Length: 72
Image 1 (cartoon, rainbow, N blue to C red):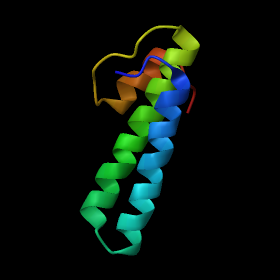
Image 2: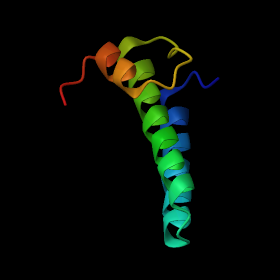
Image 3: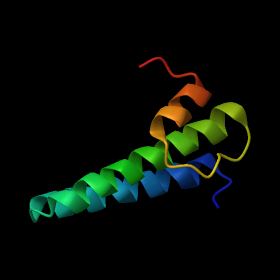
């Protein structure tokens, strides 16, 4: 598991680039899946950065947003 927030952000960026490729090839289900993973990893990077601890093992984006106290 990544401990460094920058590693989470790098993984999120990689996921978005992968989603773009999937989208351009009309692989829509995989595009959505990769977008979810990229958002999750970006939120986990913010969690690690803001709270200075390892993010929980969850795929729940709303939970992560609430834990980070982001106002969306």
